Image 1 (cartoon, rainbow, N blue to C red):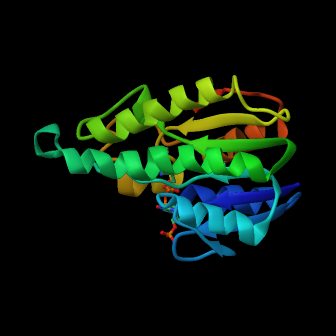
Image 2 (image 1 turned 90 degrees about the vertical axis):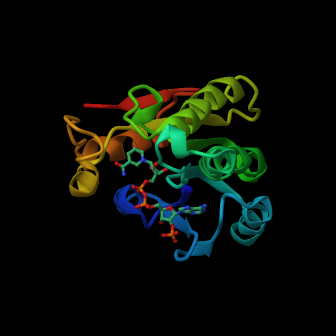
Length: 200
Ligand SMILES: NC(=O)c1ccc[n+]([C@@H]2O[C@H](COP(=O)([O-])OP(=O)(O)OC[C@H]3O[C@@H](n4cnc5c(N)ncnc54)[C@H](OP(=O)(O)O)[C@@H]3O)[C@@H](O)[C@H]2O)c1
């Protein structure tokens, strides 16, 4: 398969890219580095990327940001950071990308445990993750040409444990092979509209 992995050089993305490239042709998209430069928060950038790389068999997005702050300190514009970037970035990627997918292709998005099990300072980030879950379940009912869409929702990954352990007190770090398998299941399996939760 020809697989596009946006965020394929990040903490999670680099492990997923490395695993999938053993078996598939992988194209890495990133905001500042990769085989193709792409900013998912900009629709023109998404379109330009697909015009450059052409059709693919799978689109994986392991990128997207939202602002973390105390609810009291989050202004309206702060909420729009996550809405424009992680939420609408992935919605637009699916919307534009479906026309560049070969029949029976797949789209795999990324959310995170905050959708189901938030910690403090995540009113925006958790909201965005929940929105991605609802989007995937709804749009899976409408995609044509046997195109599938799923979302991988993992807990704090083991490679980020030192960075994140204080903001996820008592959470168990998720082994990287389990996170990788969430993406493998979405791309190589047959599931559609699934929220692939990897929380322990
Ligand atoms: N780390 C965790 O424990 C964890 C757990 C669950 C869910 N998640 C979610 O998984 C996703 C990836 O997390 P991560 O920890 O792997 O992040 P990361 O290490 O910061 O990597 C993110 C990657 O995505 C790229 N990127 C960021 N914004 C982009 C944009 N607007 N357009 C295109 N590419 C963009 C970055 O490229 P540049 O470096 O070139 O900017 C980078 O390669 C995030 O949405 C995060 O919320 C993470």
